[in-house]
Length: 317
Image (cartoon, rainbow, N blue to C red; front, side, top):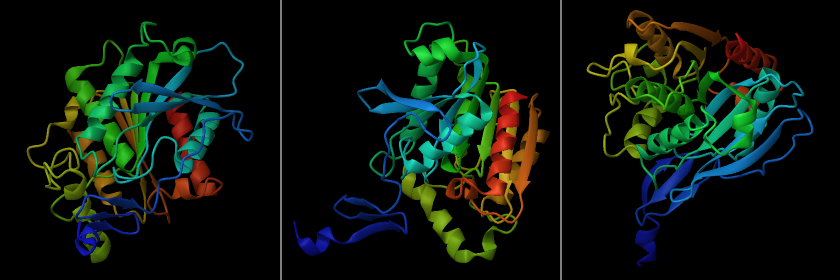
């Protein structure tokens, strides 16, 4: 191959990744992994399990340091990373879930889905649905994962995600509302700084044109088969999108951050869901003075602790 052509860039999402015309992908963030373990700071124990060997869909499960025989809520967690970086085994995800599981006293299943551009959307959605169905097989004790069979209260199942992971959580709840989940029901969904967008700007989105252009180009890159930013999966409020009244859960918590470029989409989602005829309860919490996924960047911050407590209260209310 011509070495000059092999170095031609097809797409850049800096400082995240670069894709070359010969198909090579260079990721500059979100590639590090850490092993499952007993976390010495929280006492949370984790282990990795394979769900579908053919596609390498897997998960990391977290068990809190709880000696009670009482069964606990289950959170099914979808990591962020623009659908193209990070994993269920990355330090960012792992350290945060140790904290969240400890503070919330819940069981967590962190889903590892395949990433774009090697596996463009809808792969991440399909992988996540497969994992969700696998969890549901444990509802009547038929699954094989002991931690789920022995410790989970399947009357309190929550979908949780940050950024692109929150987008996945929303889309899984919509699919559950239309298709169902082998008798298991989703009680609640927590959407943290959700990756929603649209073709037309709303609110303050156009104030920073460089950031807007970066977000505008991301969805067509990860979902080339449906590149419009008004695809209902990235813009559930778009004209013609399925009604949010079909959301398959009872309770929703929307978390936004004041300085986040996705803030106004979170508020619009909240208002649209309230007016949709959906029968559940939706709440919204805004963190002042903070930007996108600030809580993952500094686990010891006071505002991050407040957000974690808000999530813990939501899981245990």
